[in-house]
Length: 200
Length: 197
Image 1: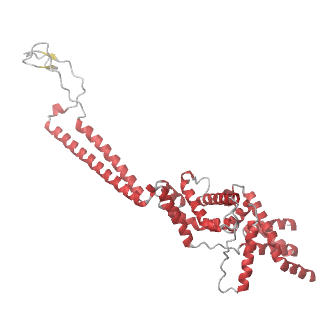
Image 2: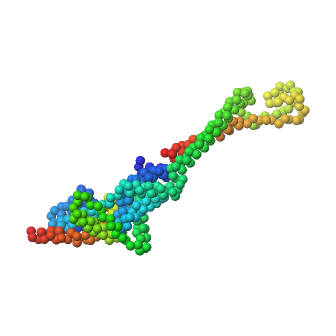
Image 3: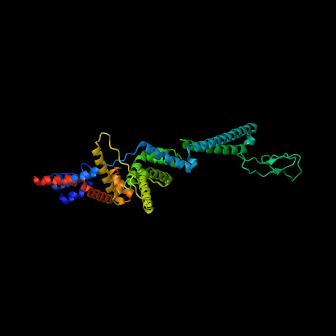
């Protein structure tokens, strides 16, 4: 390393790690070159002087900045303030509880209805129906065995007049209510989870 | 909890956590702002501008992407821009840059002569830093006082690492040439001593 190369490194020597090859070469050069050693001493003194101006930032000053920023955030966005947020959260939580309880009640009632329906109707009528009925043949006062399977015997009906059929559809109303209430409860649970996260 | 976890929580609505996040950097940023302003004798504005920096950071937190830079680098960038904007404003408004009169307090055991000498040195160093072009000054402060590495300084200044090295070298050379008269005598004596040998 010559003197010119050495002098180009003076300003950066402090930033080089201990074992950096350029640092080692420069230190070797300084050992053998008095002119560069003198120049480097000047650099050292000058860079040391930069450290003469330490800035003492006190904890109080830093905390004052912190408080000022948080106050400004809450002043300009009041809904972010912890008190307001806590009040809102409590109100929302009450509503969520109310909705969850309502949906649970609907679920329990519809489940009860379903059970009642199940036990009060006989097995035959409880069979799910497709809505497609075999053709009804009205035979007044008939005793015929040929149509026994697919006929409905109406003893006192005049020929040609057929009463409308009431076809029970499946699933029944209580089941729809159960699905709805389960959906409602799931939504309430998700909202509850979100609230807990916000609270944290 | 890491910075990125905290930032995620804050973005999700846990605003109170921002105070905790600030606590990690408030001293460093305040010191940086102070250094930048001190060279223009505007250090009284340091706390205001530091608050402004953190407030701006909070407002822009949604746009912060960790892939681009670390949170501290991002904060330094905002702080630097805030300070530069203020300095520009002060310059345009022709507000005189008054001496603050604040002299660092010397430790009690230091003799009065030493304290005077020290304060004189401090004044000279400040003046030397003040005379640097803005980029050199920022690079020097970030390196000397905030101990950031080249890559971080490059990110803050929007320069390459080699450009930062060059800025630092020029800044130090300039400071050295300004401070040279101060220690001319000892060096002169040093060479005199060499000649006589």
